[in-house]
Length: 156
Image (cartoon, rainbow, N blue to C red; front, top):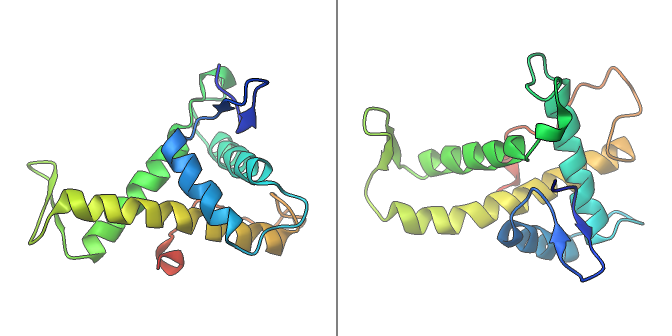
């Protein structure tokens, strides 16, 4: 079973986040105002754990019955959705009947430019939220904010 972002003895990273995305997020964290005491692996592990707990806490989560089934799908869905929304904001329209984007320009090229920016926005959002909370979860139990939210204001 894959786990949180961690290093094995041979230096291989184990994560539900794919290697390319991990590299983009790590580089973003390294050039950002970091959270004291959190290495890039600790930070990315905290993001993974936070998304897991947010999803696990939702009513109807399929992981209640067997948490070992968790495979990182909520992270991928969030990043994919935010990439989709950004493509729409960039004037690509979604054709629901054909299940694809349409518009003037190269959608594939736009996707390849936008996805890394979405991953950078995830890091920015996490840094901001974890700083406000003083860690990966709110101290105030009434604080219902999630890491997974619109990333529009974090996208450059």
